[in-house]
Length: 262
Image (tube, rainbow, N blue to C red; front, top):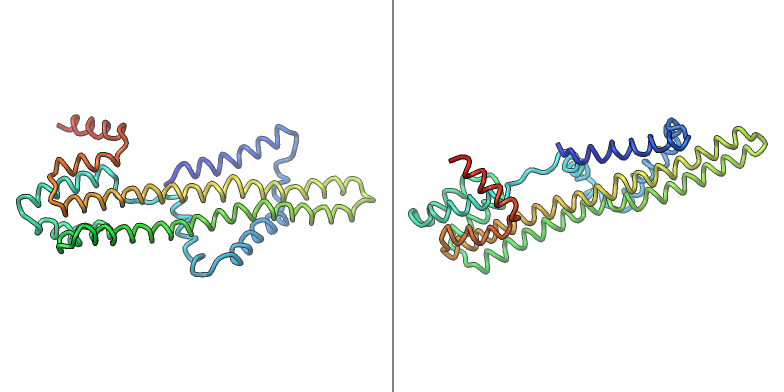
């Protein structure tokens, strides 16, 4: 579970609700079916107009990533994998790499090790893995763009909702009490549009970009490990090379954990 998303969503809702109460506004005014219809359904309609069905099919998966996170091998695990493979390859040769390629579940690691085990050159391995990383980045970019577009449309639809509400309010000019309620209800749509746009959709897009960058960094580390294996580098050389991908604080933590385990 991605706790930061839950904290952000409920924290944003609490901030608006408590803020309204402190300002003397009734938080229950947010329960406005018409405003929700205009903002939520309007945003969904705009997204269907902006993207193809093929692209929209991955939205449920994107929500799952936002709220549950995305699992992939850690950088420390990558370092340990290639360091141990270099040691095994020194004694058993390419068979050790081929055996590991058949054991791992991660498709990118499997491809990387298979290319090394099959004897391909460094340039071919680099180009193949780099192309795969770029294709993944493009898929992730298009997914994040869906939420970025939601964040752009929702506030504008909020203005549209306010205009619709004011039109209704102008029909009650003879009744001052109804006029006040109508004007207040009109601006609920604007509030919902701004809230969903800048507290939900834009931040969701940013989170997807961050998760994507983390996965790209791990895959680039795997690629460097595969190239080092292909060149016949020693386990110490590979470890020194891959350490560059791990922040210094995490390297220290890893060493501390290892020392405590002995």
